[in-house]
Image 1 (cartoon, rainbow, N blue to C red):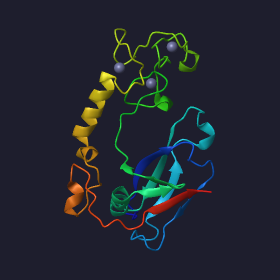
Image 2 (cartoon, rainbow, N blue to C red; image 1 turned 135 degrees about the horizontal axis):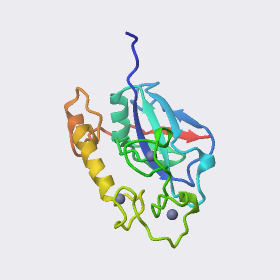
Image 3 (tube, rainbow, N blue to C red; image 1 turned 60 degrees about the vertical axis):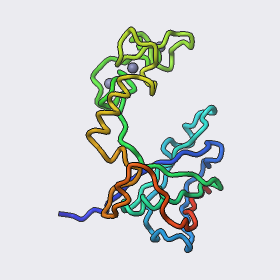
Length: 202
Ligand SMILES: [Zn+2]
Ligand SMILES: [Zn+2]
Ligand SMILES: [Zn+2]
């Protein structure tokens, strides 16, 4: 059996204006007690060309070679393009198809008809929805008054709760390791705050 390095991913959010459109460079200052090479990659979740002018935040995905390194970053914060930002664990979240708008699969494997994410109509696609159209959710049915993508959707909330039950790690701020404190359910900042890691877009 081939040995694979454990990788862990997590995300952070920062103002889109500060988020550079250039490739990301990772700099770990020697004062930082994160082991060199702990980070496997850092990339924007949505490529900068696809950002809309109204986008307020950009998400950065950081992948580490070990859960210990990921926990270190969650505890310490990082600098991204001059901003000190907190890191959070990448939780398991429900997947929703952007074709039929139902939960549990993605467009690539969808065998259902396309529906509008705003008004649940099968007559037009989401990008052609009129702004004054009454909101309706495909998952919750015709009596609903929210969009299929809404985070207030009761189907979304039920799906999240089912995932949390299935993956107890979801309700833990750290990746559980042999270290007892990583099993905490509430974030604890226990270290003596060495310099944060710096990630630049340049
Ligand atoms: Zn689908
Ligand atoms: Zn519509
Ligand atoms: Zn709904």
